[in-house]
Length: 461
View 1 (cartoon, rainbow, N blue to C red):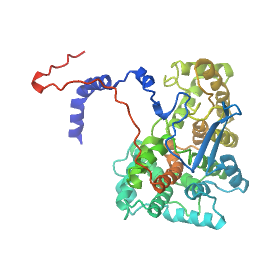
View 2: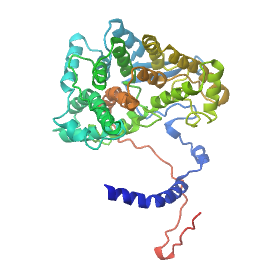
View 3: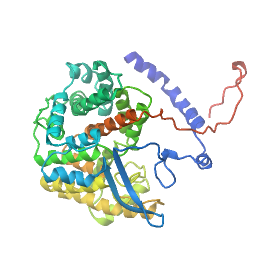
View 4: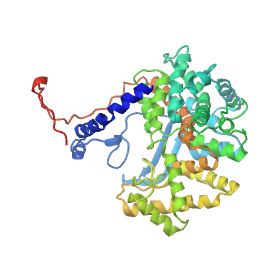
């Protein structure tokens, strides 16, 4: 390994130099996107996604069409299998139950389970909530990564080798694989973190076993915490995060990735690993980490007054504060404008958790930012739609209050979203569509082939 590192170091100056060549030969004139009417990001000029498929799994609405055919923005709406998310949430919370397992059942099978079906599904998850013999020692503990998403992706791809029918894409087999991964993801993420903390932070190595009678949220807290303890409020709050992160339409980046990869006919483990690679990105699943770090900077540098926070937002947008990216993390969404229904729900849970933990002062920063940031953004930016706090705005705060390590924020997203990925993979296979292949317009100028002996070296800049 050291010899290879020497090779990498030796070629580093060459890579730096040639990277400029790569940038130059790959930079496309921005005006060409307008000329050829390219829907960058698969969105039109209003930010509406280009319709690439149909789904019955979930629906997202941010506007309505009035009697004159005009588009009118409205409060965000989210439906799981046609059920409004608020109705689903009110259903299980009114009975003081955990909701993630019921939600996963709904996404997979298109209807709510009765009492017996839900109990059987929970038992199935409990039975599947295990890893192959020596998997933790041989796979997770070997070459521990500094990023948990890579640990999970590597583990998922390795689970292919432990499956007796990994390439069978029959619905029965894919359903089995999807539910099995749903049960295993809390183990892959929590064990991956414990190994990371042991090797990279010199912490004690703690590997707890899950308990079959506990929910997914309860087991996750039990696996992550050294003392295995948690309060009912903590577990119910985390359960709500899992419910709201479980699914969000076929067009979100990681789910669309799953559709694309599934359409090629590949195996479940490859499709899920591809989705994990997408979710890892800071523009997708990694966004709540940015939110948490931004607020750490805000609290360390800014008094909790309206004027001070307004000034901080201005400096964020002017690339003079935090990471100087010009973004206010947690504010705005690709689809929602007036409100994100997931954020509206988590807002209530974040407030209750803050009060229970005596963190009202921290919570005030979020309250003020949620009100002030959209106003400042509207003043300083030309926008085609409104902006509001999104789900990452409050999930980052909740995970912080739950003392979940930052390294587990995005993996925790995947613990929930694996339910949606599984449902969409089954939907893609069931409808037996064509391989997904969007068009790209070639704009490179033609050039002649020059024999090697006649080529001249390009002078260095």
